[in-house]
Image (cartoon, rainbow, N blue to C red; front, side, top):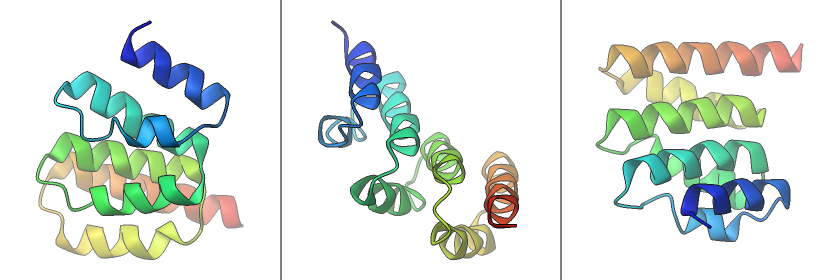
Length: 109
């Protein structure tokens, strides 16, 4: 079984620890799949790891983290996302931030 298939199995079982180990994988497809998966698992350690990734050097990683946080629906993420938006200079990540903030706002209403 490949790493991406393993990530999918762990999402089904809501096991975040094996996924967390892959968020810094050198294989970018594995890394991005793991980040996306954390948004589906939605536990506290997943949330904390995603918040840290908002400051990653790689715009694709930041964008994936933003999307995962939006999907997670954790209202505490909104302040972090708004702060990240004030510092972001990549248009794709900026758009993802605005969308995720809106997602969280709509989920609360």
